[in-house]
Amino acid sequence: MHHDGSRTGSITIRGSSKPHKELHMCRNGSSTLSHLIVLALVVGFSVTGAASAPYGDNPTDHAKDDTTWYKALIDTGAFLGRPLSVAVDSVTGRTFVAYYDGLDGDLWLAREVGSGGNCGPSDSFQCLLIDSDGDVGKYNSIDVVTDSTSHQVHISYHDQSAGALKYARVSITNSGPIFKVTQTIATGGMGLIRGRHTSIKLDSQNTPYIGYQSDLALGDESLYVARLVGNGSGNCGTGDVEGDWQCDLVYSAEGTAQQNSLALSPSGKPRVAFYDGLTGYPKIAAFNGSQWLISTVTRPGKDCGHHVSLYVDDSGGNHIAYVNQTDESLEYASPASGGNCGGGAWDCIVIDDVGPTAANLAIVEDEHDYPMIAYQSTVMGNFLKLARPNAALDTPGGNCGPGVFPLYTWTCSLVAQGTPSTTVGTYLDLDIRETGGAAVAYTLSAMVESDLLVAYDDGFAIFNDRFETGSSSWWSSTSP
Picture 1 (cartoon, rainbow, N blue to C red):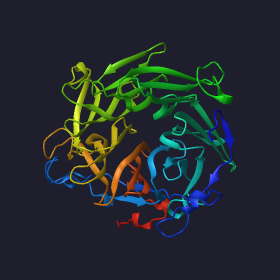
Picture 2 (spheres, helix red, strand yellow):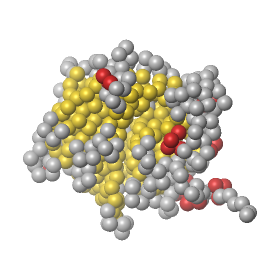
Picture 3 (cartoon, rainbow, N blue to C red):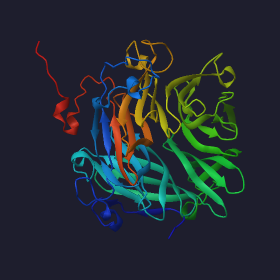
């Protein structure tokens, strides 16, 4: 039964009382809950370039060998991690993954604990059931903040049973106890579905902002942004939290917000990049304190903006990555004066071919203000890749992006590769590590079974040893 309003409850941990989870079998044969996967990638100073043009016949010609990435399994199960989201705590460097268990219709959280957990390599993660009230957990998005007493994990997600937008806050105290609160922010019904394609971010006061789609069966789709106001003065929230949320309409049109990505400006105001299916362009909605201003990254004659992802740099500039469906390519757009798209306000560049069925991507800003893009490619197979400008890697020659061989300006690294019976990267998310590298969460899926993974890139850390994961193979020594 679905319950509106706010619910505070205990946390179910893997191996405790959750009958449906006990039906799952790990790959090692042990009976567990759905079994999550984390992958760790280590990239050093040198980047292997390609010996051929970046858009050649063999897609692995322009991708760094995935054996350079450290890989570790966290969880495996039927329809697991479809979808997922990842956040790295900026204080502790710990990884948190929210994921959907499609077999039971539950929302789960895997958090990195180092040791003493119940999932992941050497029990280095703890897997927690967050919500099982109906079919919940699709379209999830996660953000994390740490203070002196606890981790605060914030997750937005969809309640498919009720057609509603939901929110969970999980408090993980330093002393051990874990507390959770789940709330219904906006309910559906009568042909109205709310809470698809959510994207959550916390401002400097740790106030959550959530971008989401509202879908009216016989009308247009709409983009909304919800923020927690907490004083009963808002226009949404149900049950005990009625009026504690403010939900604002941003934009409406046929096919709007099939994908969206929320970020905050340096002054803490929300911005949302979204795909406008009516025009086939990505749009940016920016709140100026009193109204939403909409700008369009026009690409005449191109169907662009699929799977759009956004970050805002320290000077307030918007940066987006998206799929150009017409040309089957990954593109990156950044602010420009006299640029080649968006009426001259943007520069749009092609990073890589991704094929006709590429299903996902995510962009973040690294510690040196360069973009980092995780994406799926389906050119002659299926691959998960990470794209970075050569300037971010301090290397002169790349293997993708603008330029001519051997001086391409980006490097596209191969993270993982699917097989004829498995697909990699259909579900993925990306966050930045405290080392300046990447944490990529993704699935490796067969028809039913899925592995959930996270890939770690240690950036320019002096010692990329992975010792803390228990792998001595990453150590090396030389004699003077």
